[in-house]
Structure formats: C-alpha cells, structure tokens
Length: 190
Image 1 (cartoon, one colour):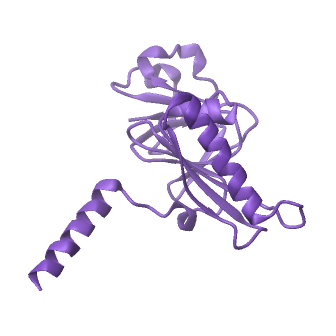
Image 2: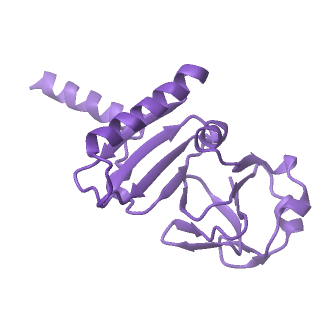
C-alpha cells in the first residue's frame, strides 16, 4: 500500500514539474502558446480531407522536417503530438525552445524582446491595458521587466504570464487573444 502511495506521489510530482498539458484537447484552432520562460507551443489545425496527403505520409513528413532542423541546430524543437484520426481536422502540437527557433523553422519574423530594447515608435496602433483602459506608448515604456511580443500572422495566442497591454490588432476573450493578421499584433507582458 505504501509503495503505491509513493509511486502515485512521484507520478503526480512529475506531472506537475513537467507542466503536462494536452494542448491538442484544449485548442481547436491554430494557437500559439507563449510560456513565461520564452518557449512556445504551437497547435496547428489543418484540413487535409480530400487531398492526396495520407496520415502516415503527413506524420513522416513532419517528423523528418523536425529531425532535419534539429540535426542542424541541436534539439530545440519537439513534436509533442499529431492526431490524424480525422483528416478534416488534423492537430499537430510542436514545442519550440524559443522565438528564434520558432521563426527559423516556420520562416517567420515574430519578435520577443525586453521592453528596454524596444523603441517607442515600434509600439504601433492604439493600446488597451489588461483592465480595459486606454494606454499610450509612453505608459507602456515605463513598465519594469516587461517583454514585447509581436505577431504578424492571424492566429490565436495564449500568454502564460501576465498580459499588461495589447494593441488594436488583438481581441482578447476568455484568456485567448486573437490576432488580426492585417498589421503587427503587439502584446506587452510580464
């Protein structure tokens, strides 16, 4: 009985320490999760029904792309899961060490940097604070230990940390931000 309790406690500890989350179950649309440490998890949801792409070929392709990338720069990307049971709603979950790995692998140019490395002129658009008040770039520049995250594509974004401000290219509902993809969507976080 005591051995079972110890095993259960260890399993729970591993679960808590690794932050196990089933992102594929949690999100039904393309979603980018920015963690407090700057690592990212991407949930990609695509429709392959009616195409010549098969489940096995798709899985092999993704695995080979990730392996090839990791072989050139080190193990910085990991396929967490791929669900091909329903080809009209394939869910791929990939974790990335940091924004540079994400950008390089996906050929994008998102930004994630300290507020001290941002010019006030880079804070474009009208800003709203997390408590739904208008804010100016000057207000934002005064934040200590803040980070700026800039997304250029239309996607859902989940910030694992404190969202301080966001610009008018972002709408936030129930902890999920949706970016317009028209202009840069800017988040100020801590």
